[in-house]
Structures are given as structure tokens and as C-alpha cells.
Amino acid sequence: MTDIAAQTKIEDIKPPRSQWFDVWAQFKTHRGAVIGMWFFIFITLLVVIGPYLWTLDANFIDIRAKNQGPSLAHPMGTDQLGRDAFSQVLAGGQVSLSVGVVAMLLALFLGTLVGILAGYFKRIDGLLMRFTDLFLALPLLPLLLVMVMLFRDSLRGLFGPETGIFILIVFAIGITSWMNTARIVRGEVLALKEQEFVLAARSIGTPPYRMILRHILPNVMSPIMVSATLGIANAIITESALSFLGLGFPSDFPTWGRLLFDSTNFMTLSPERVIYPGLAISLTVLSVNYMGDGLRDALDPRIRGR
Amino acid sequence: MADGALQEPILRVQGLKMYFPIYKGILRRQVGEVKAVDDISFEIFEGETLGLVGESGCGKSSAGRAILRLYDVTAGTIKLNGVEIAGMKGDALRRQRPEMQMIFQDPQASLNPRMTVGAIISEPLTEHRKLSKKETLARVFELLDAVGLSRDFVNRFPHEFSGGQRQRIGIARALALNPKFIVCDEPIAALDVSIQAQVVNLLEDLQEKLGLTYLFISHDLSMVRHLATRVAVMYLGKIVELAPRDLLYNDPKHPYTEALLSAVPEADPTAEAGRDRIILEGDVPSPAHPPKGCNFSTRCPKVMDICRLKTPEFKQLDDGRHVACHLMDQ
Image (cartoon, rainbow over all chains, first blue to last red; front, top):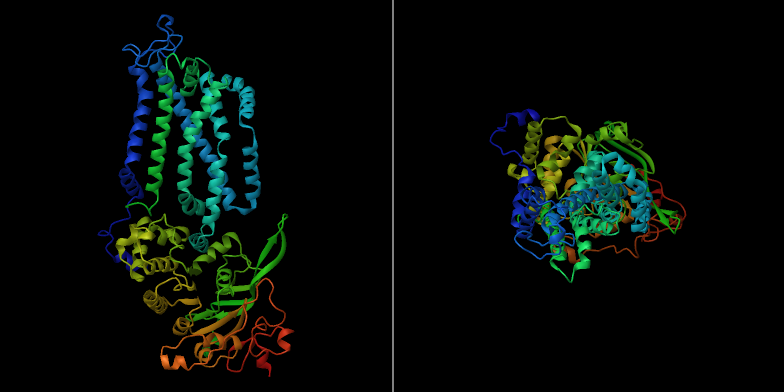
């Protein structure tokens, strides 16, 4: 039969086109997602390239210019030590964004892995879910406190003060926020596993790991996407809370959360110092949420093209 | 099948049992089992269609899936092309998969909504054949032609199709590896009546062209009459009667077969009005607690004392059919 197939003119038949083409076409139709994407790109570029253009050092102390309102020299004013608020927001954005994204990726990876394994392999389901419950039951802040106390100095020694604490924070946030993803993914997998197309793949003889990659994972993309967008927001906020407790980055190392907490004491004096980092956090989170929403729709062929 | 006895069957099932355990309580202790398939034996010869009929929940689908080793069978032997597959595991079983395929009931649920038609049909090829991309595509096109679908459909997704078209995609996937034996698990039950005929005709054409052997599971008696060469009737996990089609439809021996056939409506309204129907009393007993003796004894219109005590044997009669009923001993 293959001989006949070889004779047919393969040249004049369209080969299957890449699915990512359709995904992008669908993504473009979601206006909120496109705006969110551009805003996210804008804010990322701003915090990455910004410090090269706005060359004022975030840690330069000019005590005579303390607590100033917005001016041409200091567009967002200065803090109680006379540091330029705008450069601090830019420098803080680098840290906050990278912590948010990397911690989210780590939590997502762990959550998806645990969720899929627990849902797909019945034998380890109970064990993995009790493990998840264990993590959910842990008191988060004392745990983080202990982790930071135990590992801060050794990690600092290994990777330097900034990278060391970055790794620690990302790891601490990632390891304590994967549980919800795992539970949601497990539930979805349990439902998916009973679908006939999974049975069909079993009758074909698809081995478990390809079954997961080909049939299960693409179909649990929606909840994973939602978890991802919420995860970034969660990571940024957890990092701020840690910084506030003095467990995060050192005090001369600005992050959005740190700026926010530092500024709360001066809220009545200069409210804009709270507003700017707060606005940066909320807008970033909002744009990521919109992006995730659009991406989720674009990845579902049933919604695509509507 | 007069010469059937001489031929080696493509599939020989003996004493197949498929029990599903029931767990209850805090400790999830096994408190019983659902005897979905309880000791069935039959053979299917090359090129024939064995119809497997019975009411909902009698174990037809479980039997089909157990034969394809989608479940781990409780007991019994399944010989496909002379190879014993009931106890096979892992890679050995995987190598047998291309020999047997399945067409599913719900064409909506049996196709992955995230995969294109091309990817769905080529999945068996990527799993079992080492073909280049071009060769795979050529084979996919060939299969699309064989089931009467346009080649332009390769890039589309299952939700863009009608039920009949989706079922054709499912059939193309089942055919991809040139299997000799296909289990059709109620392939037309979820389809519109006008589409049912198309799909059944397609199945018949393919059987003729490719020399396929079907196990056709259905509760549609008239469709089975149209398609099958032999028919097996199941009740509560057991085969009660297995006979060549015409014998079974014209002269049913088992009381359950009689009752089942009397439920098929006639096309002629005058005949339909004057027809005698056998109405069975009561409900099907739970397969977790089948009655003692004959499974059908609780509802049988011709029940005798022995039926409630002894399970009837599945015996061959003089005319070649198999029946499990104490009436045959008299």
C-alpha cells in the first residue's frame, strides 16, 4: 500500500503547518492580551535598559535632597536619605521581575510534575498528595525564616551576596507555592485519564511518558497557565513580605516590595513614594494575567478562530 | 461457516474473566467484585464479523477492552494469531498492539481535542513504524482517502467535524497499522441514523478491501443482523447464545435471545401491531451479586427449578450453535 502512496503527488499537497502559527493568530485577536504583552515587554525593557539611560545610582545618598517631591531632577522624588526614587524603582524592578518569573517557573514545574505523576500513576497518588498536604500545612513564614537562617551564609559564600540571596529567595518561594498547582493539575489529570482518547492511545501502545507529553500535558495547559499568571503575582508579593521582615535582600538592595514597605512610614508626607512601586507591581501582575488569559485561549483549538 | 472448523481462528478466547474489585470503607478494603465478564469463550475466524449484542451493562464493552488488553484480565486465555496475550506485559504486549485495534463509541471523546487530524492518524505510525515525515504524511493521506475524507483535513482539529466525519477519523487511526483484527465498540451508537448507514457501509467496504476481521459490539440488533456473520448474545457477563446469524435471528434457542429479538420493532405497521412481544419482568441483577445458578433465572419466562441451582453449561448443539440453557438438555 505504501507503494501506491509513493506514487501520489506529494508535492502538490500542503504539509501540516505549524500549530504555533494559529496560536499566534488567535493570541493577536485578544486585545487585552496584546496590550498586556506590550506593557510587559515595555516594563521589562524599562527595568533592563532604564538604568543605562537614567544613570543616577539607586544607592547614591544625597542627604540634602531628602524627601523631595517630584521634580525634573527626580521624577518620582527622593526618599528619606535623598536617594532617587525613579532609579530605585528601576533597580527594584529587575530584582522583583526576575524573582517573580523564576520562582513562578520553579513552582510551576514542581506543581505540574507532582500533579501529573499523582494523577496519572495511581500507585504514588496517595503518597504524593499527602506530601502536598504536608507542604500546605507547613507554616510558611517560620519555614522561610529557618531556611534563610540556615542557608543564607553558605549560599552567600558560594555565589556572592546578591546571587546567593537571589537563589535562596527564588528557591524558598518556589518550594512553598507549588501545592495549589499540583492539586489542580492532579484533578484535571484524573478526569482526563478516563477519556476515550487516552484509552485509544493505550490501545495503540503509547508508553506512559509519551502519553503524558502528547495527550495529558497539552490538555492541562489551561489551569497551568492560570496558575502561572497568579504565581508571578504571588512570588512578587511574597518577596516583598520577606524583604519587609528583613529576611530577603539586604536593605541597600531595592526591590519593589522593599520600596513599598520602606515608604509606608512616609505615606502621609509623600504618598507618591508608595504609589509608584505599588503601581509597578499591580500593573505588571495585571499585564501578566491578561497575557496568560490570552495564551490559554490561544492554546485551546476549540476556542481558536472564534 | 462450514469450513470454519478447519481454519485456525484469528482470535480464540477461552474462559475470559474480567472482575473489577469494589473497595469500601476507610481502609479501602476489597469487599467484593463486579463480574463484568464472567467466563466467556468464543472464536473469531479470519474475515468474519462476530456481532456481540446485549443490553446496557451486560459486559460487552468490558469484554472488548479486555480482549484488546486495555485491562489486566482476571483469568482466561486470549490467543490472537496463535499468540497468547492475556498474560503479556510491557514491551511484549506493545509489540502485539499493531495486530489489534479498536474503534470507539464516542467519536467526540476518542479524539484528542488538542491534536490535528494529521497528528491523530499518524500517532500509531510514529509509535510503531520508523517512517520519515514524508512517508508518514503519504500514509495519512492514503488513510484519509480510504475512509472518504478530504486530504485538506490534516491540519484541522476534531471539533471542526461532524460526528460521522469524526468517526471516520477514528477508523482511519485504527487502520493506520494495517491490523487484521478490529474491535468495534458500538461505533455507530453515538451517530445520527442517517450517518450510521454511511459508517456501517464504510466498515463493510474496508472489510472487503483489506480482509479485516471485526468484533462488532452493539445493542442495535438490526445493524448486527446486517453486518455480522455470527452473533453472540451476552447477559450479565456471560455469553448465553452464540450462533450463525440466520440461525439466531430465525430460530433463537435461549429464552433471553427470544426476548431480545422480540423487542426489535418491525417496519410494517400492521405486522408491528399484531406482534407478540415477550416482556421480561424485573431488572437485570447487579453484576456484583449475580444470582445463584443461571444468571437469567430471575427473569426467565421459562424458568425451572434446576435453573436456580445449577449454572448451565455453554454447550454446542447439533446445528453448530452454542447455547447455555438447561432447556437444551430436555
